[in-house]
Image (cartoon, rainbow, N blue to C red; front, side):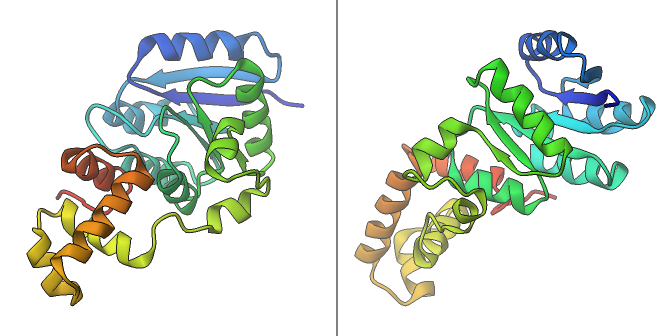
Length: 215
């Protein structure tokens, strides 16, 4: 088996160093470089030749991680993508897989799981962190079934998007032809399901999964 060439994108150097040490111990892997932000990832990855697997965090200081993935996929159409994140959130995970990402592993996962994830996605198989499977899907073990299950209802999603765009309950009620009280009920359900504390966190979440974009 030829060595799997791996490039990492994460703004925490300590995380990068830890992952590189794990990979360098394994004869199947070759850690060929890293970037600490999205811009450097897009520009510098072009200089290292073929890349089999990108390990990337979606929270980067200069660019949205999903935007970076889209750009890297354009430059490296044959590469596989593994997200290494602290976010155990079903909607974010679904959005990632919709972009063509094959793997999603939490940063508190162990060495064995990271290695297993890389080997699986290199072979074109989907991989989701075991902790995500256990906490989000109630014992379901088929990844495709997990990704197909809706978390928010269609109405809850509409309320969440409009709230994130800065609209009041009365404005949302007028648009959706429901009462302001019903809007507030849907909003409470959204916040509970997504484990968000306030509107600011909802806005951040909306940006992360692509509900809000900035030119």
